[in-house]
Length: 356
Picture: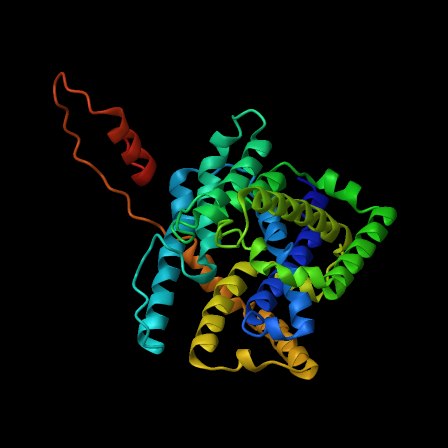
């Protein structure tokens, strides 16, 4: 393998760094954005594309299939540990009994559960003809159901799944074709025009930014099925377009963002705990009203993003994702003329690496 092949592609590090900063900002401005024009516009802009773009890049780096046991070790086990962190914080530090519901992800942990499920099901989904269209149809139809929005994060998993699949189908050559001078200009103008529209169009305020969350059904959002599916389809269009526009605009060379882009998981997890604590224990975030206070909050979000990218936290999250699970060894005992059910053998082999 040549040195050129081994060289790190800083485009993706810069892309992930910018997105993780937007994730942090998007959460921290939540309590104050409704009565603040600057934060209101920023909230709409961020949520229109930041999770689609983040999930797109997750799909891009998920092309290599991993065994079920590896996915359990890298995603499911860390998810359970982080759930325990949240439970401890709420019960011991905030004196709030939220209950330990492992199948109802707390706050930002839905993304880890979603990533686990996407990686498990995608090899099978890709066998379905026109699976991209099928995934979009599923994302539209789930809004018609009354399924609890936080159970296994199923609504979000279905709504955002098309972006994961789109990322898997992209390659570096296709991304390079998007980064021509003409397309960069179009992308910059598009972002500016969309931001101006969000700031100036009064009709926007008749809708809730929750249309981009992916977790709520149409009834909750006050929409008919037809209206809800039309708006969600529009959200898909905006999400895909701005995701590709961002790819056009992100710098390709190494810079200060590149370091952070290698450590996004630590930032994602730590900011969630920090935000949840500050929001529950204080009223600071609810009292951001002036432009000066808004700019101070945005600066603090950027500072926290860099602070959570320190090597110690990154090492800790990496260690959690590489926990060695013990293997279960069954006694070698053969029963004459008796055959174990396939499903039992198969599950043991997949879950525990048992050699039957």
